[in-house]
Image (tube, rainbow, N blue to C red):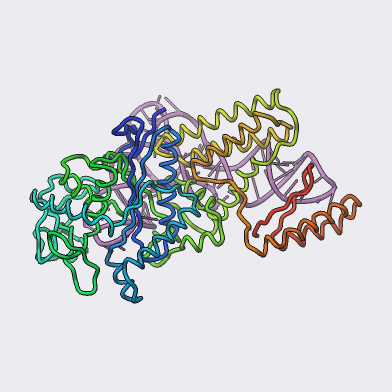
Length: 469
RNA sequence: GGCGACGUAGCCAAGUGGUAAGGCAGAGGUCUGCAAAACCUCCAUCGCCGGUUCAAAUCCGGCCGUCGCCUCCA
């Protein structure tokens, strides 16, 4: 079954054919590191992580590159406000972001280039563009000449003359065309600067990704991704620079994720309506965020609210329910056969959905069908290889979505310390139940429930877990 | 003003021509000492109007509404 991907460039869903059979190069625009990352950043990271995981599942060897923007106006401003060195500040938040990625179960990229370490590639590219007439100097700056690029606007669907009217761009009369954008910004006092053939300064925003892509993945990449708020101007300008420089198609498939919506609005730094990754992970698991995101489609906005998060948490508990140990001893027979079939069907349904432009919602539906089949089989006493295989398939497919399906870690020191006492109470309650002291037994259970500890009596004894109300 | 997306049950959400996946919540039931969990059953005609078609949530037109980009942004 062939994978199909929606390509922003052509505005259609196309069969995925990589440049080189069996290999995929992927570049995803990373964050500007000047503040704590929020769950919108997490969403982008999670989505492209799963794109990468699914491509790997399909048998491709994926090279995945994502950058940090560590030279930028906002970083410089923030650093000046705090009396810090801009690169030190950027490094601080980049390191923090690495921890977030790990917490969110995002697989590490093969390369994490940073602007500050790619200067020679950037200046080399600007020089090349200037030589071919795609760039011009202006008072220490260098600008890209959009009128020289005949298909400028092809990604975002804008035309140069239309782009002029009604925009909020502050027109810089010095520029040849209002759409011209900075490739290099001449140094100003108090700003970090690097030497270049155009004088001291720093790169414009867009050139970095073009240069890093070129450096680490070559002149053409299979997939270039990012949030849909980057389509214009960032990705449009990347295309302009890269294709003017190399004369080749920059990226074959442009993928853009939708925005996380908080109270009906895009979550963003400038709106100030953000929930940081730290904040989220204090209350919820990474699995919950992933499930919340993948319940919808990656290109559409995702509704984030206390209700949708809670719904995701409960759905997760249901997925985990299928991973409980077998209870019987039936390894063959009608029930075991039914489970074997359901396992096969779940895999087919999952991959069919994912092949259709990463229809994760459909994939998750397949997971729930498998959960039901496993739980039914367990109740019927099925055990053995088919039971294990069904659970393993569930783990594997959920793993493509980056779901761990592990119980929320309760590694807080206080909770760890409480364990022996909880075990003791559970043990005492078992004795009470054997003595049919129901009132007392129920009092223990209810009291523990009030402390966020849930008890369940099963045929194999009582199990307990932490579960916030 | 320009470009674009979306509007499916109480909530989230898939489906893009043949009479509506899945999850959460809710109702009833099985199981249980009682619960919990699990399992079974029930719960929508798809924003509004008009058109095309044997047949539309799915195509076309209009309207209403929400959102994104056009400025830094995942």
